[in-house]
Length: 462
Image (cartoon, rainbow, N blue to C red):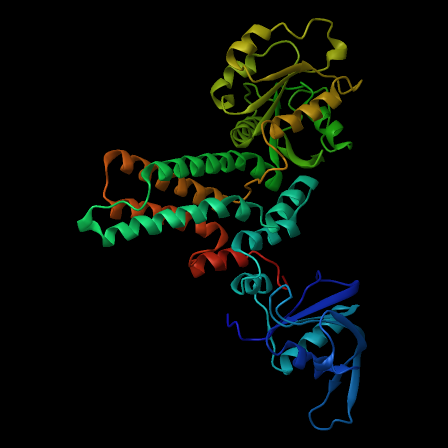
């Protein structure tokens, strides 16, 4: 990609719509659009104004042969106060794909080129308009499917994680500079960097990074949805529960054991959190080849799940069988069809408390709605538990890995100080820490392959 090019792309979704927006950015964007615009001279209008007129196709042979393409409104934004920090124009036309393509063709004829995926946002980053974490948040905001992921992306786009790390990073830079200065005076054996203050800074940084890393599990859940496996023996009420959660007859319900042979997956958003519910085959020993495949798939979904809803009626043998698979899961053991059972839900309480101290255990009836709202609220609470929703939330795996690497480098500095490492080695580990932290926001030279991966996921026009 060449930053001095003028680029163009349709910024609205493909297909027929009431309106379409074509975005143009680059040094020649205003003069270029002016060549195909019939109305005011766009090179002389004020920034951040909207002009009415027509997009026209003027044949090169004769200026008299003019064809109106569309009646439009053109918004002019002059650098540097634009999204890309370059001159930027947005043509608001009718949503016909033919009209939009005709305008794009005209722009290319006049010297623009089609933008690559994410190139507008990449230019905003390269021109210092936003940092790299904010650029990634733009993509997250576009793809947000629920209230929680929208709020997290919006917070990051406003510089949440950047602000969180900024002050501590600047202090670390100062200490690194002082330690490197000591190297110039190695023969005098002087210390410019107070080691006790450096140790305190490292502890503060580790505390901050540890808190950020602790939010990733929640952030990843709200961004990608929480996988929830519904398990139990045949006829435990799994499909009935799925249908009730979705409020539709999605899964076949029958008194015949083994009706569900394959997994059924559907999503539902509860209190801003998206859950991916997976109805599985009843787990039991069977000689039916097809049902046996379904049972193996059910066990595979348990391994992939974050939450497991275990439904039972008369025993919890299945929990004992799957004990190792459930150790790292959030488990709900639900006494199913409680409207048909008159015995207490605490029959297996001691076993559950001993083996699954964090398990949620209560009765439920889909038929009467008993504890149905409780199930939904506790599902949400189990994900939000211990997380401050107003704090900076990490949702990006790249950020998580960078923070983990920064933590390792800080621990190397810490252990190095205890061992009495020389200043040059301490400075090396400090620079490594700065590199990892800076890679999150792009405050260091970022590998072009990384940028290509990040911005290649954007839609064209953004």
